[in-house]
Structures are given as C-alpha cells and as structure tokens.
Length: 282
Image (cartoon, rainbow, N blue to C red; front, top):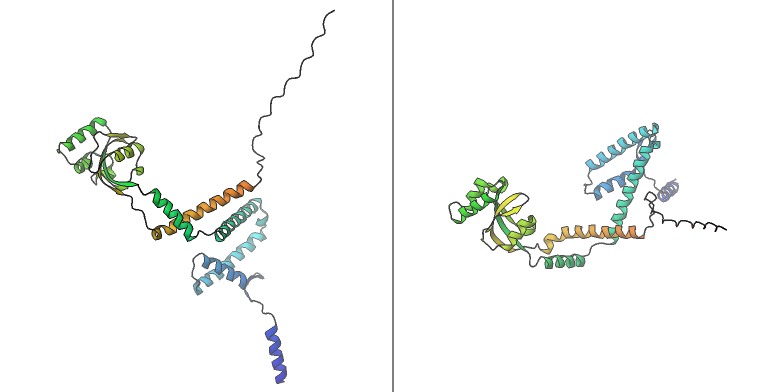
C-alpha cells in the first residue's frame, strides 16, 4: 500500500498543472493568465501591484465581460459603426505598439544626449536676456509727454506706469516685465530693446500693434543655460519625438501610396485633325 501511495504521488507530480479559472460569467471563463496580463499592463503604466488593485481588476474584468456578453447578445458587434470603431481602435493600438518597439530598439544614448546638449548650449553662447519695463499708451503724443516728464524727473517711471499704462498687468508693478530674451516680444519692441543699453530709457516711443510703448532696459545678462542633468529628461523626450517623426517619414517615403480620390491631372490638348483641302475647280 505504501509503495502504491508513493507511485501515485510521483505520477501526480509529473502531470501538467493547469491554471484555475479566476471566475466565470454565464459559463465564460476569466482565466488567471488574462487577469495577470491585465495587472501587468496597469503596473507597467505606473500602478502599484496591491491586493486592492487586484480586487479592482477582478471586478472590472467581470463587469466588462457581463457588458460584452449583453452587447453580443444584441448583435452590436455586427453594427457597421461598431466595427469601424473597433478597427480604428485596433489600428491605434498597433501604431502605438510599433512606435514603442521602435523606441525600444533605437534608444537615445547618453552620448547622443550629450552631443545634442553641447550643440544647443553652443547656440545659446552669445544670447542675452533683458530685464525690461514699459508703459503702454494709445496715443503717440501722450507717450512723448510721459518720456519728457520722466527725463525732467517730474515723475518716476514706476509712478507713470501705475498711473498711465493701459497694460494693467505690468502697470500695477511699475511696468515690470521681468527677465527674458528679446524674442519674447513683438518685433518692433524686440528691436528697440536690443538697441538699448543697460539703464537706458527709449528716446522715442515705440509703436506696435498694441499701441505706443515707453521702454526702459533695467539690466541685461547672458542667458543662463541649464546643466546637462537638469535638462536631460526634457532633452531625451525631445530627441525621442524627433526620432519617431523621422521614422514615420521614412515609412511614408518607402510606402507605395495611390490616392484614388486625388483629382486627375488635366489631359494634354489633342491636336485638331487636319481638314482635307477642297478639290480644285476645273
């Protein structure tokens, strides 16, 4: 009897183990494998694998299957609109998977990041940013009067900005626009800023689409470029997106696309047939 029990145990150990169904809905199984795949997908997206998550996933899978069965019972899977939406969803999933695989197979290396960082930093080497303030008014003559009053020290720039500027956002702060490159502003304003020296007040009002500006450049300094570590994640994302864009361009270039709906090119004019000459009179 003992030998028989040992033999039975050995046989049991060699038999394949089948995963138990997690639940059934109207006789249709939700397998442990599909459940684990669902959990893994959520974890890959940043969720924490906890008992609470697994309980929620199980209930969600049951809810979905109940709803799907009800939809199929009504024949909704045969509805043309549903079929089209299903096809579009499948295409989106495949495109996303393709892009994900491409990025996985073509990662942005630290060497690539450093090279791009050095290039961008070199481009910014001579860039300057300015600390600017302005007073905005509607009329040129009013702007000239304010400039004259400021130069004569009858009023300070800050007081004039608070009193007269129609740009109420900066006006309440004495006209302060803060630090920034000249490219932050419209072309006329930017050109004036770049032509002025530190501490200088504009000699004449500057006209833009917003009105007439009285400008003062309070200070200037070289543009502070972030360190490699500070910009690494943003730079990597930018390069990943550029890599994907180039990949998609390559796919389009290699594809044979025939646009059947494109308007046909106009046909070349057919030369008129020569008219036979009339027989000569006799």
